[in-house]
Image (cartoon, rainbow, N blue to C red):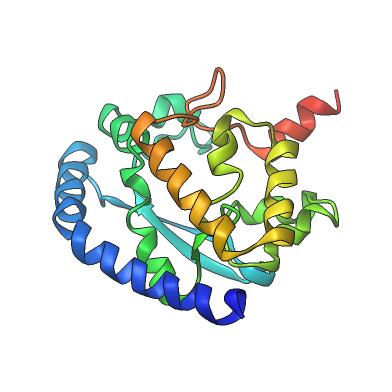
Length: 206
């Protein structure tokens, strides 16, 4: 009952309330990023959701659209702006995802939505992370976030799917508040965000 009825209801109520309360912050960050990036302050990207159904995630844009001479995106550390780094560190870039929650594409709590290109790289066990709606925060996010390697992330994601409950979601919510305040786990070692899963597998199989 919790997963099918109460959780979506709580998601909608909390997301709507959160957007109303955070609306001044939402507008302020959007304006600052518009001037800092000299571009659209929002970042939209296709991600797989529940049952691998694709949707467009919306976040605040913290990186420039800088590419090399071959048209390939430059590394994250070269595209991340100073303002973007602050927005990411304080997790303010996640606020627009409350709109995804209202639409029903995401939940407040669940495995983080990743790139569609990873779908063909998952093992059958890892694919179980898509049996629930992806979340703004989740069990992996409060247990290391970007300091974890990909296998650890997926283990925690699948564990969450198998053990989802109101008590666990409430625990994750409290720990998320703590992590946001301390800015813990924002970056992987030697990387401003998190290396791609494909890059991780390539290095692992060398």
